[in-house]
Amino acid sequence: MPAGSIELGVLVRPVGLKGEVKLALDADFWDEALDSRRLEIEEPNGMRPVRVLSSRAAKGGLVLRLDGVSDRDAAEALRDCPLRLRGEPDVPLPESPRPFQVLGMRVFVKGGGQLG
Image (cartoon, rainbow, N blue to C red; front, side, top):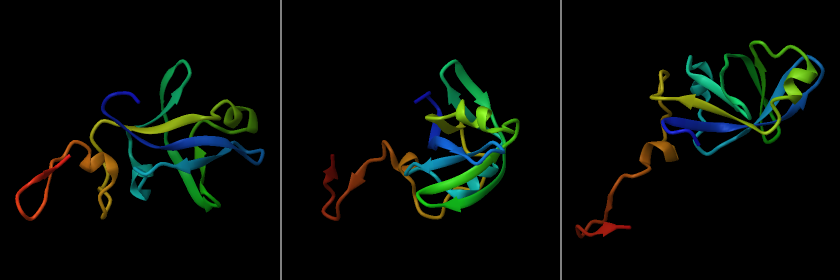
């Protein structure tokens, strides 16, 4: 994972003929992240900025329509590519903490001892 990014999920396959892709959600995913202006797709040749035009629920994830992905061939080229949010989130954070928010934090028990 590139430093300073949050993996939201993986684009697992095309859906239909108009360029939609299915996103398998990661534990760090939250809905508002799709509105970020810092979304990127990690392609084999590097990172590519992307904007989500629409999303809808699907079994096991979401179906996304992405700017610049207009046909099945373009969607197929994104198979197995992670969707990431680069840098600090520029959208409201999730109500319940996600792993990226607590990673590296110290945890103490009532008696004052530290876990881990």
